[in-house]
Length: 104
Image 1: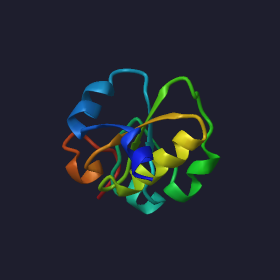
Image 2: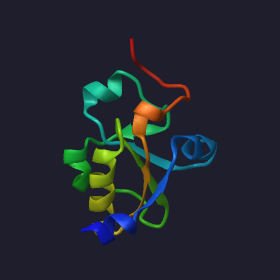
Image 3: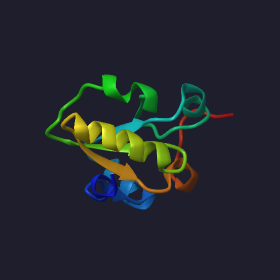
Image 4: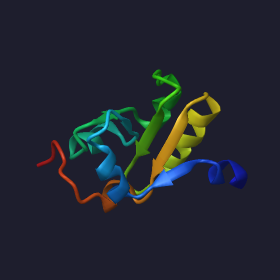
């Protein structure tokens, strides 16, 4: 179990911010309510319990974010087992200091 987590790449929220100008896939695995309360503009909402239904390009990295980094680790593990190249965003939205869409 720990070996699988070690094999999943991760980046900080600052590193993710520099990647947003590229054509990346970013999945926000929080609940729809959490997503609506504020999300990164490039992020697509795919709640962690629906991650198995995600379909996309398996040749490109998939960045995964949640609120703190725990759900995104679970989602990254599931994506990896389905042949994707996930990159977990450490710290999640609680560490994100960039602009967000939505919210109050």
